[in-house]
Image (tube, rainbow, N blue to C red; front, side, top):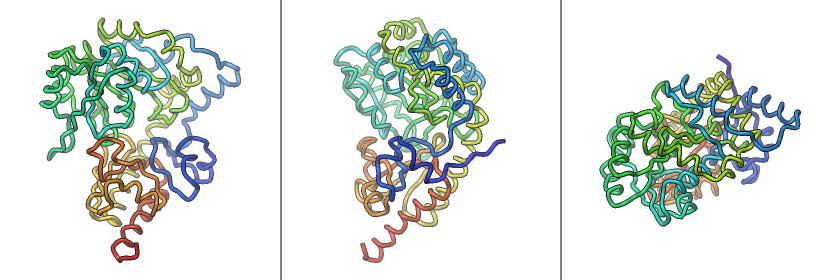
Length: 389
């Protein structure tokens, strides 16, 4: 298997993306979901070849991505996707809004399950809908969807559910059993389910991820999948996302979108995405090995240097949901980390009220950067404990 390493800090700080331009150079940026690894060569070459050919116009259609995604879904999850059911747009957030516009009436309501990806609070209002919060449950077996509470929300008239699958920021991979039960509730109450599966290729246990549309006829009848290669292959800026239908109802919903929705897809993103799905497997395998090492290393470092901080290793993705409440860092520990440790974390409160006292850390970096970040946080704790704060 090939190996991959994060790029040196000097090279990373030359990047112009948000991760490396938001904070001064003395801050270690572990907040936004961008990885520090070099791009997969097939993706690089696909984009470079289009530029060298001066092929930077509008896309002709979704067909190249549709076939590539269908092939990837079949190989990876044994999910049979008809390429004719695949559409594209610029990114997953736009895909969500456009799907909501097709499935939710004006002044309708959309259920979200906090703590959850912050834009989930913003996207339903963009589609002229309100937000209904049904928080996840923390059980002895870990986090899970609160199915009884979801049913109550559906029974009260909710029109749609935004499902985060796998769930950001927890790295939760919903079980097939839970998803089937959710699909049954969706069909019972006629509630659309928009399943955001952007983190699906980043699952650690092979075979553990279940695409929502694959679980049952009920899921296919009322569900839409939105996803992209952007998180797994680190190409968010190239702007190409996928929308998948699996029933006459949902095909009509995709086909009813304005032509401009598809036209927003970047031709460079389209070709980069095709390369990722078709030829990016070895690179992703190497990335997952590096992330697995960092996932374990983070647990060891936190146990040794920050006892009292609670960390549950994610089952998918490179984002760690850290519980600082035992350290007494207040409602916004990310603010303390930034001010006193010069480590930028994503504030937990942005993920909903349940995130008070939490912060999200991106561990898709070098082991050295990860160790330095934990050491900086540990020094803050030590200075607070000895009264020098």
